[in-house]
Length: 389
Image 1: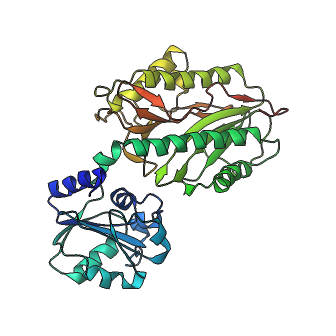
Image 2: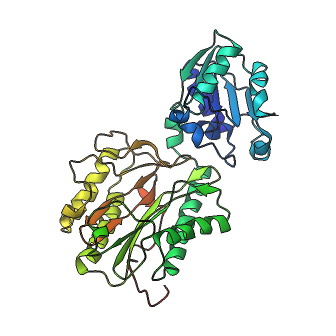
Image 3: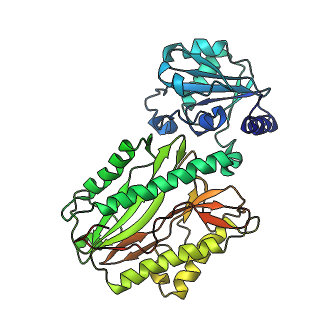
């Protein structure tokens, strides 16, 4: 019996007119196979990495025909993570993949995605020169955008884990520690608590007031030491069971200037106001940053926003099996918010000579509004370096 997700995917495959799809490890593989414990190859996503005519070979493939026949072909190391309840699973060695595929692939019109695409095109051409190959990278984008209850539960759990991880770091900040050491705490917390991976490189961005370091938003200096008067902008994400978190907050080490302290409260208030304005089936993604700007302006902090109302710097993105799922939250995006969508909103402020601050939340669109999945205390800003939290 097909899963509900597989049935939805098959409808899309047939609507596109494909005889089958063939995906290497990546978000489409993960979504279609329903094997979330199987990590996909990040390097395979970057076709620019295929230099000098070399092809990146896949560690696993999933082939699904328009009739629902599904086979996963994998190297041995992934065999215990693959969902064999809805897929036939063939374990072999990478160098045998082309021969194995000759007994699996029967279709003539096949959709593939960008992961290992050069190898896939070459291999399918060797199998049968009459096979037509189509770019199906975005084929399940609309389906993936609406999360089911199981996906929401996983992402809710990940959001809380990320909240807890940064609270752990805040409780263990010490004078003289470097930015790298703070970021290493994020890594170690994930490793000790069983996270499969980071969803991106973590940032605990130190900016110390009235120093050259605070003249510009970037760069952050890896070996900069923590001293009183340092603002720390966190940008953190973990990946587990095939889903990602993306999280941002700012803390101030010591007593913050009143302008900065009220600025952070204004940034938080703008984020909360934006979420309160969401009306499912009506609000556009392109409307969201305008609400943030409205509240920041009302509170007297609009000029400190990194991006102004008319600028299209992007205030966030959808999130799920990838950290950055499309589309970005930009002014010209007419997509309507629907229940089950999870997106990240990440407004930022910069105070020259003082520091850089960000707030980023994972937000779930519900039937009657929206809710924060990330719930790190919004009033936690100043950290007394003489005491533990």
